[in-house]
Amino acid sequence: MDLFIQLTLTGLTNGAILALAALGFVLIYKSSDVINFAQGEFLLVGAYVIFAMIAQVGLHWTIGMVLTLLIAVLLGVLVERLVLRPLIGEPIISVIMVTIGLSSLLRAIVSTIWGNQPKSFPPFIPSQPINILGATVGADRLWALVIAAVMLVLFNFFFTRSREGIAMRAVADDQQAALSMGISVKKIFAWAWSIAAATAAIGGALVANIVGVGPELAGFGLRVFPVVILGGLDSIPGAIVGGIIIGLLEAYTGGYIGQGLNQVLPFIVLIIILMIRPYGLFGQEIIERV
Amino acid sequence: MLTLNNVEVIYNDVILVLKGMSMEVPEGKIVGLLGSNGAGKSTTLKAISGLLKPEDGEVTDGSIEFMGQEIHHMDAADIVRLGIFQVMEGRRVFEHLTTEENLIAGGYTRREMNLKPDLEMVYHYFPRLKERRHQIAGYLSGGEQQMLAIGRALMAKPKLMMLDEPSLGLAPLLVMEIFEIIQRINKEQGTTILLVEQNANLTLAVADYAYIMENGRIVLEGKPEDLRENADVREFYLGLTEVGQRKSYRDVKHYKRRKRWLS
Ligand SMILES: Nc1ncnc2c1ncn2[C@@H]1O[C@H](COP(=O)(O)OP(=O)(O)OP(=O)(O)O)[C@@H](O)[C@H]1O
Ligand SMILES: [Mg+2]
Image (cartoon, rainbow over all chains, first blue to last red; front, side, top):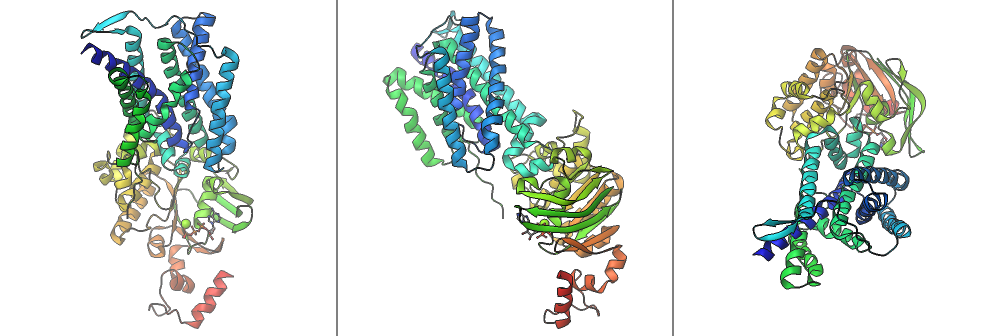
């Protein structure tokens, strides 16, 4: 029972962090139809930047977090402006190739600045063990869960209540019609990329706090893909549910069956679900009226 | 209020679609713009609202003035902020958004934070939309979608509302209903209306003034009552011959006159 609770909490935390990163991916795909293969690298950058702020510069973690967010937003805007905007109207495959290139570039920049050695640093979020129903969990994991959950709720609110969030979904549906009501599509794309980079960076910071930084973080970022495919490329709730399912599955298989298999099982589940629901769990079907 | 002066529009750098289009829309009026398929009506509206760019179209000559300001080089978003709102052909609702979210998107450029009174105003004109406020717009009926498209425009509180074939694909009774509401909006809100249509009968019934375009330019204009008396209009747009019978396509005279129109 202890093990079960332990695994559940681990899975939920990882899942919530994955959901954050996946959310950004979905946002970009929804608003601009671009599949961002560099989403995992946004997470990596977030992790290293927070590491630099706290362990190397020595800032308080709250300030570090805010600065990391700002840098991520800036990175998102820059990428949209310099890399993607010139590609508007180009075939989708060139855009995909560019995001793949971007992912290698970001990885190379990170390893040039910080090297390839894994680095641990004292967890900045308080991590004393806490007892829940007999299982012991680090407080940092709980914090990560809470922060991720709060972010997800905030985003949901943003997309359904705020004018800017609704405009973003409107652009996803019909760009020219959105333009006809004065919604600047360029501005919305910039928003989408900066929010995507910011959510991934928060995810990265939370991971870094728990396991430290190292190149294997990019592997964590890669798991964004099974998450979004499972949840549906264009579904915000899908990103959240998909993240949590993958997180839990990995934790349970790792704990009950064995390490190693936990890397494979999510993909097996993924294939089965896609055979039943080709758009993913929550993917939008195309509305057809006659 | 709005003046088009010899406007020329070219798509993809080669296809000349508007060939010296001139017209005027006076403040507070309903102006009709009639013409057959491919005449360039939608292109005219897109030239005014700045929506040509995504289609690789461009105003290459002439000028478009709105309330004393040249607008043909402005961004679509700025033109909306000036007070021009185009309801695009084919309704174009955001299918995955709810009715109310569609309306909020329509009010995107408004400065007010609270759009509640405006939502109520739209629901006042279209009570049916209120019943379906939380429904996904993609599943509304065609008529409801057209109401939503007009409602979205109302949310922006435009000075000039341009409607592109609002009767498209709707049952006659519903078309009447929508035209009545357009007239009410014009009177009650003081919104100037530029109405693009193929339905000449109804358009001439609601408009204060009308233009007829063929092949990228205006070929005829006048007050509805005068246009109704014009033999060509009667024949080609109202489907009536001189003696009030339905036209015959084998009529040689008809063919000749048609040719004169298109040249
Ligand atoms: N994006 C485009 N690229 C190239 N040509 C275009 C484009 N849009 C319209 N055209 C051409 O311009 C001409 C006028 O089109 P437009 O849509 O303005 O006509 P319309 O009067 O609105 O017709 P309808 O009543 O069928 O809507 C047509 O011949 C059309 O083929
Ligand atoms: Mg048209």
